[in-house]
Length: 611
Image (cartoon, rainbow, N blue to C red):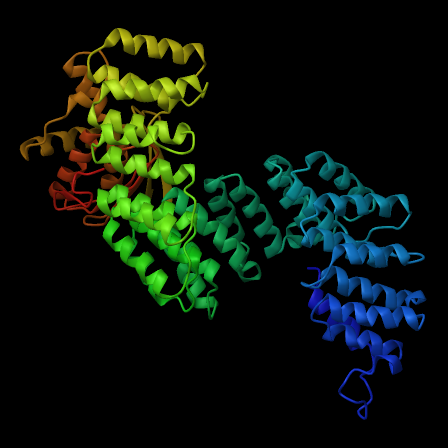
């Protein structure tokens, strides 16, 4: 990897002779020789110090020495306190800038987030006939990645090929990252695949896994991680890879693999940094283990705003609103100031727990105590809080009094509440505003259709469906992911494509009979189609969550927990069904749906039937 600015400065100053021992501690700049002047660069703490030394370098004529000029440029461009404008003025005074000087400028602009300027200097470098080296391209490609400049990145890839840097691992890693961030994962994979296996170091695997993670290709991240581990001890994963893998585990609900990653970290890294610890908290709470996430949180030596936000968000997803308020109180006691993201999590926690008064107090404190201007996300959370509590009239009145124009988030929260509490009149108002915005979210149409269907207004259902077809919108099929023996399996509603399909449906039949004896009755009102009762019951049997539970019952040991991740809100029938399964089969079942977690045990759910 390219050395950091401090290490580069160290290398430069190591070559310089130290000041004489008899020299006065106070700076006597007028008597300093060239090397002593340059040695003083590493003592600079701000631009005023730097300009003082620069003045004496110019005064004594040292600027004509390329070595002195390059060191001045390096310090000004790459120091945290540096100035790229001032670095440019130094650069323009250089008679014949070399590759090192252009590299400093390019790197400085990337550090300064001036990525356009970085590419401009690269072009100037090429036009000047100064040949780039292997240290040039990682930062040029980083600028392309940040700008999502695919076309420029592909042109630079051509230069890399032409100049013979395709054998350099770090340049190739930068290409992999650039293509991934530009959304061209197939090109990332092509670069990675062309590399010799012996040249693929940990950084290469990190680049390709991160590229997939940036595009939310979570399953592929885990497959790549497994492939990397086949390489033995030479490819021991570093923290950056493990953070990407933890993100994949989080999104796929793969807690067993997440635990393995945590174990690896504990065995191989003496002290975890806050970013990794926060990723662990996020993984555990979003995979259904709030207790484990809380354990990691409580053992942190240094908690920051992000770690508190993750913990509050996790408690929100598990419906622990009052506990989230306690964590928020602890955050304030530590002297940490909440931001708008923390308050979104806090309002969400109040919403999932149904504590309306506390939610109102949080909304008011955000403005009065912490001077945070409510954003549309905060208004959306508050509408959701009122809507879930069945306060539909209060919710629409709140929307009408909002000081900013309500967007689709707000109206969708209201429409969802109307579907939940069967309020057709206000549901039509919310849908009208959503459709007026020319949005193409199929869930909006599906929710309105379901409201009509529950009221048996089949003609209106047909009108909504026709409009969906006209706009080319398809309803998102319900799917459930279940982790069995460290592998994640996906099921969709009415799924008959699984290799174990016959066994699964036999188990479904067995479950149905056993649950009947315990008093389970299928809630056919959840099938919002104009079909007979028998057809509704058949459709209910094959909901994705039930298929996933059946598969887990077949392929896991008696008494082991079942963890499922859904893409849609759980229907009432699946909720009741899971409660019965937890009793009859003596299993703890954790289901993460689109909005929150449900923990089923001994016939009850942690949500207390409020979700």
